[in-house]
Length: 355
Ligand SMILES: NC(=O)c1ccc[n+]([C@@H]2O[C@H](COP(=O)([O-])OP(=O)(O)OC[C@H]3O[C@@H](n4cnc5c(N)ncnc54)[C@H](O)[C@@H]3O)[C@@H](O)[C@H]2O)c1
Image (cartoon, rainbow, N blue to C red; front, top):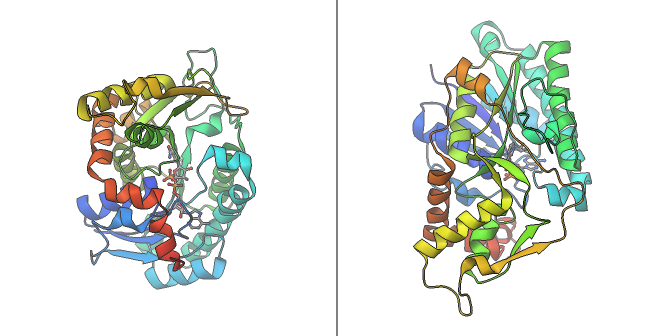
């Protein structure tokens, strides 16, 4: 039977991939609850916004009454909670919004979902799920080891971002244990792919290179991350919310550990092939790489063991890093309208009515 899924943060990078996946590849409906911060872009949802199975509600997850109205009106069968402040550098410059949205917002959503779920009955109550989407950054750093993060690795977050996400994970598990809220948590590695806001490493490097600007790499560029193509993540999340076990945690990863500098060199190599006509003054895209002072508290290595979700739910990523990064570079080359409206701010100002 088809479900109605309330997705928070559905106008963001991963949330919009989840919404597109549900509308395009399943029979389920979506209610997208998003405040539309700088990171929320409804233009990422143009391909699905006319579907009768899609609805949008501009609501802040810290707004209890707003959320209560949405739950009452749409009566969801499940919640997929992605709304968050998500950029580590921004969390270092201004942690307040991270505490507010990631911790207070998650608490508010949990309370509204709990009251709603308590009033359900029969199958609707038994089948309700609260799926909290989190990050592998809650586990901290694996510098100098061959270890992988598993679902039982102790939490040791380093940045205000990862500490706020760790707090939200603890809240969700407490609501599960104390109140019986049927919750599931997933922790995922770094995502990349289409519709990624150009402040993050991969889109920033692609767009800077196309404009002949410097490619700033933190420290020595040897920070290792596991990379997952965003559409693989969206497929994993849908599998978890529909087939996952209540109370379980699933780690999600791409089995693609790469040093940041390797990622940047791969992008440069693809651009040499796909855009041989370079901006004036650029001989090789790689010549644009510049090393800049490292981020304070920068974690050196993250690596995730995603065996459990493979074993228990049969999910494996469809893309390798090589196929996913090629698709991503090609997407940015073919979707200049989307990213130029992000870069000049018009996606945001027009929506807010200030331009
Ligand atoms: N990007 C990654 O690599 C990654 C990896 C693992 C986990 N995650 C987690 O996945 C989730 C989504 O990440 P993303 O990269 O798509 O983030 P994003 O920054 O691209 O999108 C966040 C979305 O949440 C919305 N939002 C922010 N504050 C809100 C509020 N108070 N109320 C309602 N909506 C609000 C924004 O408008 C935006 O649409 C986050 O919880 C993040 O911690 C991200």
